Image 1 (cartoon, rainbow, N blue to C red):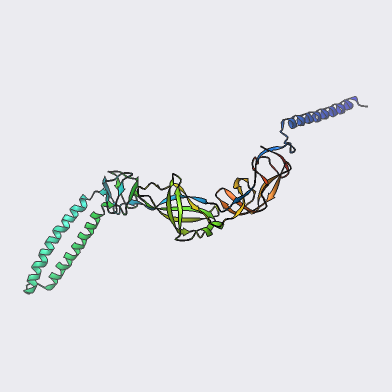
Image 2: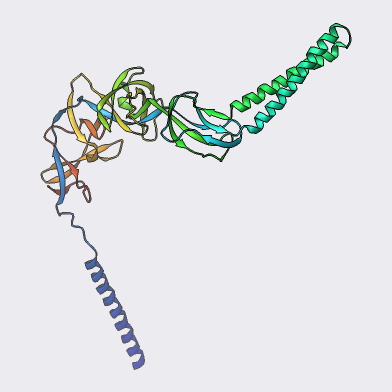
Length: 351
């Protein structure tokens, strides 16, 4: 027998054995380092015991106040800004001058036109006398009359352009933005000032489809501002949305008269308060306790120390609360917090 071959075979077998042992050792080390989650270990959760509550107690929907009218003013003609007569926060009245543009060249052109009108009027008077005496042809008088009318149209055009060099407030309001300064160049389409009217406000809330029936057009509702909860405002419904937004809710808009001292500002948050006189009792849970999908909401019931998934049916949502019409009863205990690693049938410990 060739001893070299035997030694080679033995060396190969030994090498393979060493590799296998090394791999097995590495696997054991890796398994020891990786965290192995114990599914039998109890999970700490927070829970709530359900009880029957008054479903139709007073509740509200949050929304935002917006100005009834707001616009950015720009010049109708181009020119250098000579003077800005207001600043941010200035209260302005309809027709009040706000910005003055340079109109010196236009005024010089107007003087030239007035001189032309004076000369043409003299020509018309003279030609009228001569035409009556048959001293000139009537066509000369007609040309003078037409020339005078044309120049008067030019004068009216210049006067209108000069008037447009004074930019006036289109309605009563407050200057909420100053977008240009003296010496800048004004042109059509370039905003100079922003005027906001907050004597009347628009208040918009977004409500789920099952709550739309609570709102009627031209009906008054109580509205409050978060910053001034002591002030009660009356808002009349002006619009009920006919198309859902991205959040599957519908906009409802109200017209609200501001306080006399204009305390409610554009962009403030508020609430429309609703109250149903028909008393109804039911199960109300926090919406944060709901898991599952929109089509099949679920909650975790705590039974005999285990968390069990329970299908529920939601009849309505009130802010961050949900009214459950079936699937739960008084005395049930549901998980409200501690959903990490929680699964159906998991052992739980209620804090």
